[in-house]
Image (cartoon, rainbow over all chains, first blue to last red; front, side, top):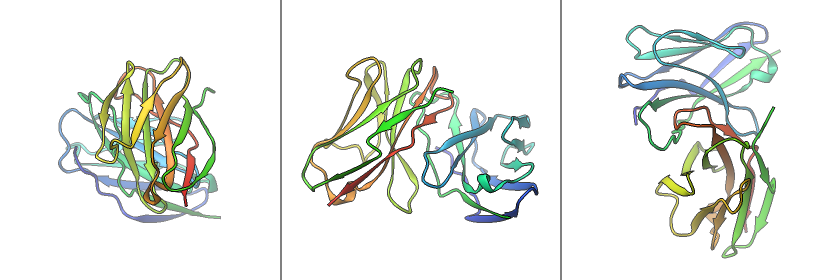
Length: 112
Length: 114
C-alpha cells in the first residue's frame, strides 16, 4: 500500500482556515485519496475523498496537486470541535478488502 | 442518521479470560471491519468480513481472535485468551457496498486486561 507523509502537528486559531498537507509521492493511478479524522476519545470519522479533481463537501475541501503526489485538506473556518487527528489515507480502487491503513496523522490544535 | 454501535463501552477482564466485543453495523451495510488502537498509538486494521467470511486479516489477528455475524444485525470479535497486550480500544466499522466505500466507525470498546 502506498505511503503518505503528514506533519505530526499543526495549530490554528478558531474561525481561521486550516490547510493540512499530505505527501504521497508513490501514489498509483488508481489510488483514491481519503481523509478521516479522529476526535478525542472517538472512533475515526470520514471527512472527504478524491481521485484527481478538487472536491468540496459540507465538512471540508480537498485540493489535489496536478501530479497527484500531494494533497491538502482545507477546513475553511476551524472551530474548536475540529481539534482532532487527521489522517490522509490512500485506497486502491481495486482493493478487495477495503482495509484502511492509518498512519500517525496530523494532530490539529485549534486555539480560541 | 444511522450509526454503528458497540457494546460494552468498557470491558475489564483478567488475563487468560475470553471476551466478546459486540458491534451493530449500519443495517444495509455489507462490509464489516475491526480495528484496534493501543493507547497513544495509531489505529491498526485487524480483519475485514464480507458475505459471512473473512476477506482479509492482519498479522495481529492470530488464532486467539475470531469474528462472527451470529444473526442479521450483530458482528462480534472474540478474543479467546486475553493477554496484557490486548488492552486497547477496539473499533468496529462498516461500509455499504464496495471495498472503497466510506467506512463508518463505532465509538469503540475500551478493553483493559489485568
